[in-house]
Each structure stands twice: as C-alpha cells, then as structure tokens.
Length: 260
Length: 298
Ligand SMILES: Nc1ncnc2c1ncn2[C@@H]1O[C@H](COP(=O)(O)OP(=O)(O)OP(=O)(O)O)[C@@H](O)[C@H]1O
Ligand SMILES: [Mg+2]
Image 1 (cartoon, rainbow over the protein chains, first blue to last red):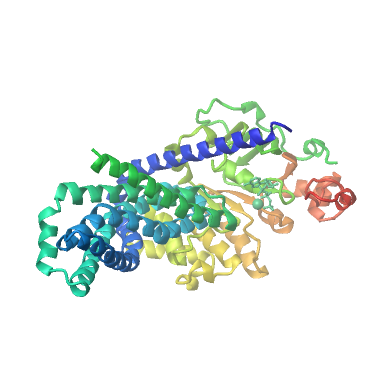
Image 2: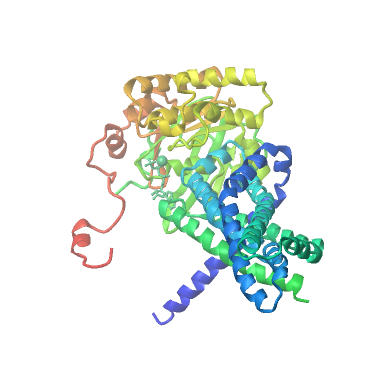
C-alpha cells in the first residue's frame, strides 16, 4: 500500500525509458534504410511535396507577419539610439539565425508532423502496416524512411522561404511605413550578414529541427496504441514534444554556435 | 468444464508423426509431407494463456481448417505461423525452418512464399483496388506494365471484382474488401495461403464462388491452404482436415467425415451449434449475479 505510488513512479519511469529506447531504435533503422530513397527517389519527392509544398502557404504567411512585427518593434528600439538604418540588418539577422528555423519548425510540427502521426497511426490501427510486413515489405523502409528524409529536406527550404518573405515584410513596414532609407536597409544587411556565421548556422539548425520534428512525428505514429484514442493522443504528443524539442535544442545549438 | 484432453484421442491421425519431433531446425527434406509443424506451443497475452501445449500439423497440398469458438486464438495462431508474434515456448516450423528463430531478412524471404488474408482485409486505403492487388507484384517482380496489368486483372476476375478495379477501399463493402485482399494474397502465387475468416460478410453466391475458388487454387497449383473459419458447413465442405481448438489445445481433429462421426459432447455442441453444453459462450469472468451486486468498481 505504502509503496504503491513509488511503484507507479517506477513503472512510468521505466515506460518512458523504454519508449526512448524504441525511438532511438527506430531512428537507427530509418537511417540505415537511407538506400531506399536512393533506389526509389519518387517516394522521396512525393514526401517533399507532402511536407514541404503543402506547408508553404502557412510558412510564407507567418514569415510575412513575423517580419513585419520585427520591423515595427526593431524600429522602436533602434530609433531611440539613432540607428534606424540598421533595421534591415536586425530583421535579417533575427530571421536567418533564429526565427526562421525555429518558427518554421514549430509550424511544421503542427501542420505536417501531426498529419504524419495520424497517417501512420491510422495505418497501424487498420493493420495496413502488418499487411505490408506480410507482403515481405518493410514498412519502416517503405513508409517511414521517405517521410523522414522528405521532412529533413523540406525543413531548410521552408525556413529559407520564411526568412526571405520575412525580410520583405520588414522592408514593407520599415521602408514603406516608417520611412527608413531603402539603400541603408539593404546595404547594411549586405555588409554585415555573414554566410558562414549566419546562413550556414541557420541551415544547420533547420536540418537538426527537420530530423527531430519528423522523427518524433513518425515515432509517435508508429508506436501509438492502435485505437482512436491512441492515435489522438499520439498526435497531441507529436505537437507538444516536437515544440519542446525544437525550443530546447535551439538553446543548445545557439549556445554552441554563437555562445563562445 | 472442458475435457482437458479427452476427445482428442478419439478420431483421426493423432500422433501420426510426432516421432519426427523437432528436428533441430534442419530442413526436413524427405521426412514427410508436413509443411507447418507446431509442437508444444505456448503463448500468453498478459495473464491469459492463449495456447497451452498446442500440437498441430498442416499437410502440404491440403486444405486444413482450424475452427474453434470466438476468442480462442485462431487469428493469433496465424500470426504465430507468419512470425508476427513469437511463442513463449514450443516450436513452429514452416518447411522445416523454425519461424520464431529467423532474423528479419530470412523471415521476409519466407513470407514471400506465404499469402495471408486478414480478417479485416488490411488493404492500403490510399490506393485503389487495382494498385492494391498490383502492390506485391510491383514490389517483388520486374514485370512489364502490360503483363502486370493482365495478371492483376486475372486475379481480380477470379474474385469477381474486375469491374471494381478503379474503386478505393473506402468505397467497397466488407465482403468485397475481403475478396480484394484475397486477390492480393494470391498475386504472387504463394506456396501456402492462410485465410482468416474469408466467408464473413459474403452472400450465398459469393460464398459459393469463394469456396470453389479456395478449393481450385489449392488443387490447381498444389498450394497448401490454412482456413480459419467459424462457418462449420463451408469449412467441412472444402477442408481435407479439420482441427477444432479450444482453451489453448486441440480438442478434436480428423477428416470431415471423422469429425462428423465424432460423438464427444464438445465436438457435437460446436459442430451442431447448440448454445448449451461444455463450450461457454461467455468470456471467463465472475458470475453475473455477483457482478451485478458488486457496487463501485468496474
Ligand atoms: N493485441 C492483443 N492484446 C491482448 N490480448 C489480445 C490481443 N489480441 C487478441 N487478444 C486476446 O487473444 C485471444 C485470442 O484472440 P484471437 O483474435 O486470436 O481470437 P480468434 O480465435 O481469432 O477469435 P475470432 O474468431 O473472434 O476472430 C482473445 O481472447 C483476445 O482477448
Ligand atoms: Mg480472429
């Protein structure tokens, strides 16, 4: 009796550890299955479309608004110090280094990740995955691997779209509305943005987020209990875990890249 | 209560080749005509023991029917034979190879020689009927598109659904979906085919067609068929050999005539479908009165 809560705590701890282990096993199996996407590039292209192209609208629109807000807020601070010409640099740097990769990953987790989880989970619940296995087709390679690499490829592209549209949004607000000089907006940005320091680091972040978000989504679907409640719980978990993982990893990556 | 091993000794061929025993996994080439050999199988789901020392042989080229009350583990048995589940104890050999000891690659190689018809159909919902049947062919063969098309149409013709090839699985009735799944299961011309309740949801006409299709497939290509069914009449009509299982064991076995002549109360109750007798309709649990009086809890 006394030990019941303790036993429950232990059991759920073990469950979490076991799930963690299964997740890593699945990631390993998917990485080892990379040959599949080389052999059947069509499957990969379909998934880049699925994750990437279908998320473009939400990513673009969000990028536009985020860029516009950045310009408004940035102008308010910069103008106090007479540095309003640096607005272009500020908007571009925030987007490319930070907001582009992070917000895109959050949006993809919500838009495409949840869809992936529901799709895989439902395939499991309706025995489609078992059916594939019985046709001697490995569902990890055939279904999961193309989705993982599709997500990983799409993420940096989406982040680039987000940042580009965001810069345009910042330009409209900064130059069009607030009267910042257009030449200064672009030239400051051009002079101070560094390919390795800013762009490459942003792309690395995006790639990492792409792996993590798609991996979480696929694992939640593949590991869910095959019921309606199970699929719904897994979908929620994809969004929650995906968002937390992105924000946590962003801190770690930023510290590693820009901390020193 | 169920007689624990009573009626099993009455009819048939029990103990036929038990002497061959588990032969160390080596391919039992010339020994006998048993394709699937199950020995002393034990399988548990949590607390519940589904199989408890089950012995069962499936002969090459024959139609073997496995029957038993709902929930005894017939589907589970098929999953064990195809290596989707692993036994807790005992051996399951397919063509002399222990299925549960195979690694993934070897298991997949074995499964190419098997076809299974799921109770639920398990069709890919995003592909239409044609592509579903074509799927295993596209995966495992390099057929030209025109040959592939002919093959798929022939398989669909066999189950009477050639005209439905453009439909999606969501547009099929349950019985139609199961027939499409059957066409898919036979697409690769397997050596052994496992049917899980193929007759559920079929009207008398398609039922008759299915029965003769299963028999035809079996005889034309020297296929080995395992048929899981509740349907006593149809199963006895096409089976060469019948196993009745209950509570984790084989209760009776033999040819349809032997089973029909079997006098034990259990077999009679099941085959004649009487509600009263040693077989229980209810899943094990406390007595109804006790359950109703028990407040709280669930
Ligand atoms: N995934 C599972 N987890 C736990 N128990 C299960 C699971 N699947 C089946 N069982 C249990 O295993 C037993 C056998 O199930 P199975 O599906 O093999 O029965 P069956 O003989 O095929 O029944 P039916 O004729 O109704 O299809 C049942 O009592 C069921 O409660
Ligand atoms: Mg069943």
